[in-house]
Length: 404
Image (tube, rainbow, N blue to C red; front, top):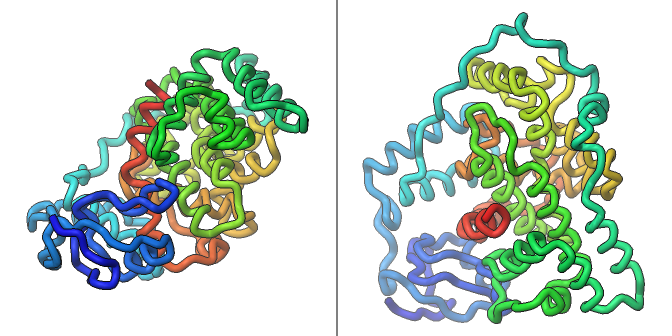
C-alpha cells in the first residue's frame, strides 16, 4: 500500500483506505476505482494525499475486485432493474455505471424477487376515497409523540441550554440511546465519540438533533406491520439509504439543511407503510401488477386506489402538524414537475437507492428519473457517483442505530 500525492493520482487507481475530509466526513471508500470526478472532489475537499491498494498501478479493465462472471451477472440484474429508465440520460448513465461496478465487486446482484401471489381485483374490499380518509380512519395514527414538539419549543427559546434540550430527549430512554448511536455512526464521521446528549447538542446542533428525533420517532411508530413479501428491515434499509443519499446530495447542492433532507428521505415511503398496514391485500395486488406489467409501483397504486403512497404520506404528516416543507418533500417526490428542491433531491435519492439495491420499497424496478427534478439539483452527473460512493458504507450502521 503506497501513499500518493493528489497531483500524482490518475483515473483507474484503486484506494487502499477510506478517504475522509478535514471534518471527518467520509468522501470515498476503500476499493473505489478513481475516476476524474473523484479527483476533482478530492481537490475540492482539500485532500492532499491518499493510500492506494496497488501502489500507482491502475486497476485492471474489469475493475478492482471484479470477475468476468460477476460483471455478467451484474449486467443481467441491472438490465431488469433499469427496465423503466432512460439510460441515455447522463445522470442515469452515471448511476448505471456506478451500480455495475458496485454489483460486480460486491456480489449484490440478485435477480428480482418472485412477485407476491396475485389477488383478484373483484375480491378486494372498497378502499377509502382519498388519502385523508385513510389516515383519519385509523385511531392509532391520530397523534404524534409530543417529544418533537417539546424539543421545537425549547429550541425556539433563546434561553434554552444544551442541558435542557438534552433533558427533554432523555425523558425517552429508547430515543436517547438511538440518537447517541446515530451521532456516533458514520453518518457524522466525527473523530471523537459523543458520550452524552448535551455534548451531542453542542457538537451536532439542537435543530439537527430535533430533526433526527423526528425521524427516529416515526421509525418507532412503524416497526411492526404486516408487509406482504417485504420485511421491516428491507423497508427501513431502503428508507435509510434514501435518507443518507438525500443528505449527501444536499451537501453537494448546498444551501439546504442536510438533517431535514435525511428525515425527508427516511420518511419518503411513510405512506406505503400506512398502505401496507391498512390495505395489505390492495398492496399485494399492486406489487404483483407492477412486476407483471413492468410499471412503477406508485403508478399502479394510483390506478388501483386513485392516489399513491406519497399522497398518503403527505396526509399523515399534515395530520400530525409536522413541518410543511417535510410534508411537501414526501408528498411530491413522485411528481414529474413542480417539485421544490427538497422533493427533487428526495426523488433522485429514491431512484438511486432502488438502483443500488439497498433494501426494498416493494418493487425491483428503478422508477423513471424526472428530468425536471434532476435539473433542479444543478449538479453534474459525475457528482452523483461521488455521492453514491460517500453514502454506500453508511447505511448498514445507521440501520443498526435505528432498528437495533
